[in-house]
View (cartoon, rainbow, N blue to C red):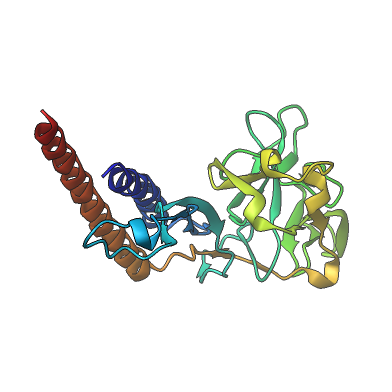
Length: 280
């Protein structure tokens, strides 16, 4: 009976985690660049029970010798699904969509640390001390970084256009219309193991240093993308990759499983109560 209570209570915790994960996916179905998470489960260790020898076994005992008794499951890791989201046209030339692999590098508006995102919602923001100079700023408030890890700065006298490789084309508004290429380009990076990413809020991610192997640092898993690897679309945003029908189905399945295990806890408690009354 204690085993039944242990198994069902552990399953309650695991399914609660699954419900929370699916609910968060559903809540972000319209969030640009959002990547859904898939909750996994792992089986707990089983015990092998050695019964009495056959010559001494009790009359009527049918339990086979060496039977394995499991102890249920627990919540495993939440894996990030990196499938491409649908393209959403916005008409804003500073909205950028990554096609294929890659992440934008953003400064955290609070700590200043580097964060990663697939959300390409950017706008121009005036430099606080230099008139006519602008930064490309993410919707979270952080600055977009270039290939060298520096905030991208733009001069207001130029018309700005992003090409598919992340280079910034500058056209003089008051001159003869000639175009030049800025020395800065959008610094996209590839995360070798996206499952190491931890959600920091505002659709930003950071590498979780607590789960890294000994002797490694977060920078060991970040690789700058070369020009030939980058595919950007200006005027578009990548939509969430959440499949609402699937998530609602998973959510209802997890809720029903949670209810069944809650009932199992109740039954195990009743059985323990009956056993205690028999011993009185």
